[in-house]
Image 1 (cartoon, rainbow, N blue to C red):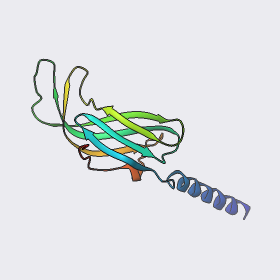
Image 2: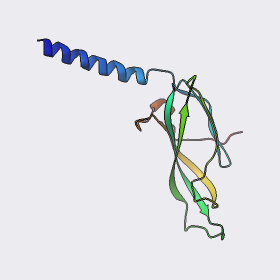
Image 3: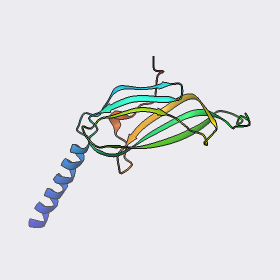
Image 4: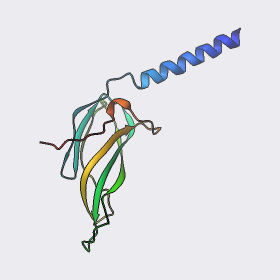
Length: 134
C-alpha cells in the first residue's frame, strides 16, 4: 500500500512539474517578422535558461562567384540563445542559412519553433508564417 501511495505521489509530482514548465504565458510580444534577411521579434514570459530558435525556410544561396544553386532549397537554421533575467528576449538577427561569404536570399519562412534546453518545442511560440516587418 505504501509503495502504491508513493508511486501515485511521484506521478502527481511529475505531472505538476510538466504543467508548470508550460503554464507560464510565453508569447511573441512583438513579431516575429522578417526585414529582408533580418529576423525580428520579442519573446516574453519564457522564463530563464537556454533556448534555441529554429527557423525553417526556402532560400537561395549565391556563392562569391555568383553561381546559383539549381533551385530554392529548404534549410534549417538553429540559433541558440540564453535568457538571464525577466524571461524576455529580443531578436534582431541577420539570418545566414548559407556558408560564410555566400549571399542568402530568403524566399519564405515555413516554420519557427522555440525549443527549451531539452530540445522540446514550446507550443505557444511556434508559428508557420512570418510576415514582413512594416
